Image (cartoon, rainbow, N blue to C red):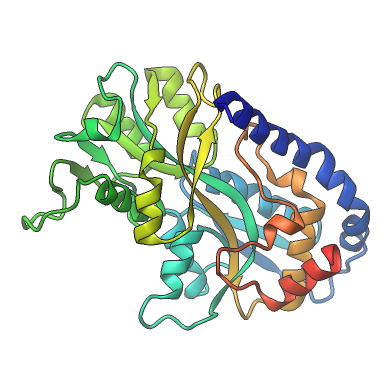
Length: 337
């Protein structure tokens, strides 16, 4: 299939979600949400989000607004965080009730020594994350191999980006070397910078590339592109080795042409995002949140988004090996059979 066709397919799926899915299911779910009383409703729900300018915080803010609007909680608030790894820790320690995290990060957390099996469970797979390798348009860097001898921003500690970037560099043959300095790899110098600090560093030339895992478009990257002029590197050739070494969490996905003004389409690595909670979250809140994901999907997609969303029952349940909360599984059976 040609690149434009795949881009059109992704855009069509997004449009379907906006215009068709919610309309088709709202008749089932919306009355149930509207009929809910305050009895048993939590006074506050906290959603662990992500960095300003990134898709996590956008999605989490829309989710919190929707949770409050439809009476799932009296009040819902968002916590800005470093990303997936931070969000999992927020859930584990009870600082958040809901959180978004990448499937690979959630799987790693579940297998970490000392983790309690089933402590963190899923409410659904919500959207696709796209790994961006961002360089300045006026650089002569056209591939990942071109980063040899360069300095790159590899994600803020606590982010999902900081998990996948070392894996990508490893499978590209640029593995870390035991030289006594955690900041220097074989032919690449790394800086643990997140989205916003990394974009500043890219603009002033203190880094040559920025890795970021997020939705499409990522607002902060779009703004920096308008100001500086950026380009994206194709990472898809790394997929077979990445899957062989680190699991089947990763897919070949397309950032459609025009996602960032004037940029051509580019293939990259995709990782599914999950909406997670603790296993002890009460059944009513879980059920009502699932009903919200299905029946009000259109409220949870940022207007600028062109990436793939999974806000339909048959997609939401595919949670990459992370078990669904029992009340979520029951809700999906009720909604979809």
